[in-house]
Length: 263
View 1 (cartoon, rainbow, N blue to C red):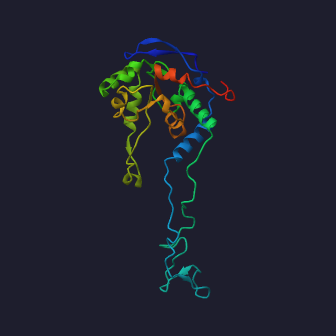
View 2 (view 1 turned 120 degrees about the vertical axis):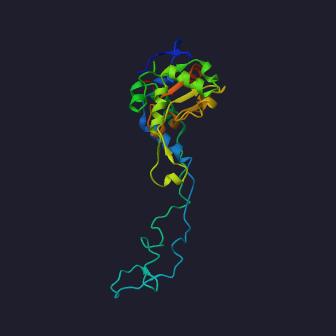
């Protein structure tokens, strides 16, 4: 159960007030709905692809029939097998087709439930810790800071504030996780892999996105652009999230449907 009130911290890590948490933080935890919404969002990045219908079939190979002491796969005059699946240069048994519908959709109410559940999961300390984030030095989950946080324009100033708030240890965890991918992904723009760091949710960008863009694993997003994948990367809910006071006030406009209920 998430607390009703939460503390607000200033840029020095000191308490600067208290705020009543919006109703959305008490939404039910639905990892199944979150996973479905994340998979559907991932499908929107896929590009339709298919094969040439004649790929592997441009050959004169025919089966020799029985009586040759050989299998009955299609063969060239030289005796080399061709055309059939499993042969060199042969067709695929079940190739990708352009007609396949890979862009998936989700009902509006289910998408909203996934978003609300992901927001609520980010405020549960045990879920954030289970996801792998280092939160031992963070004073409170959910972590809410004053609106001046949105006006930080330099990376070194943001680093100092994050160290004060106890978040920098989690970014160091991301730095230590960077490794070179094994496999052909190295040649396809996916050379390095790393863990996911904290998410910064703001209501207005006064320079914070520019200050944070070079910090590994850190994402900055406007509260109106939140989606389940940002709050639960890889469909694993409980991402460490830093909220500004104004973004919490924006969340107050989200009202839970009557059918959803509150834990």
